[in-house]
Image 1 (spheres, rainbow, N blue to C red):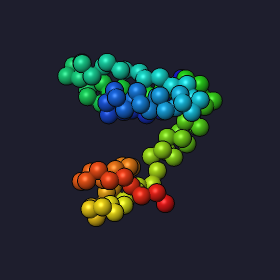
Image 2: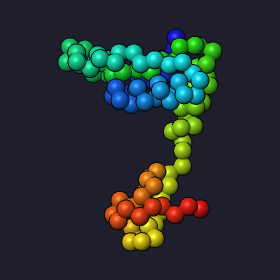
Image 3: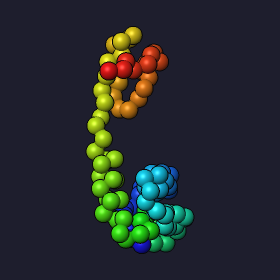
Length: 102
């Protein structure tokens, strides 16, 4: 087992481990409930971590995670209300119109 990264919270650690599992890489979350003792130990030592189960898949896990972090940001203008919408949203936050397909 090898530590891939430290997550800021348990929800993200679990999400990232599940994403790796979906890609065929066995991963687990360690220190999942250590945040309860954050005052007794340094805060950075109580954050959850994502570990890759098989050392041979570690490089692939690193590459996948780097690819996921580099996904392009989408910005589009709503055709209905002309609001600028940033991020991966499929609907306008202002009027609810769907994002036009390219």
